[in-house]
Image (cartoon, rainbow, N blue to C red; front, side, top):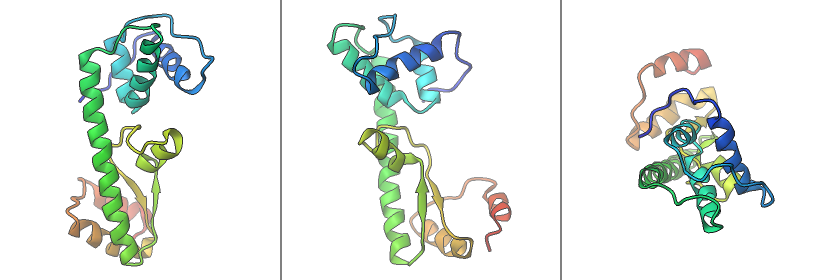
Length: 165
């Protein structure tokens, strides 16, 4: 897994230039040919490595940039597998909550990725954000626990903040 660190000057502009080519066919190609390690760091930190790599490949097919380095492809595969695992977990949790008549709503994650990119695994998902009514908190936690979910450290503090019973 790539760890986040401050981006060097110009790296954010480079990331935006690559992503812009994914969403606008007439966007100019970035002014560089090599996928630098700093670009990998920044794309991973902002959870947009997969669309960035996808856009980079499209630029490479047009001969505008070099092929993706093996390190980027390896990280891309790890990110995609993590996103697919989160998508599968969301499906299991959603089905169990539905079966127990627990209203729920997901934020970001695979659902947002599917809406933005047409692919639930295109945006990196390291966790899932699920909202349930406060009065359903205990029931939802029991369901999640039954599916093997382990609460993170400090989750009791969240329970106090939300007023869940």
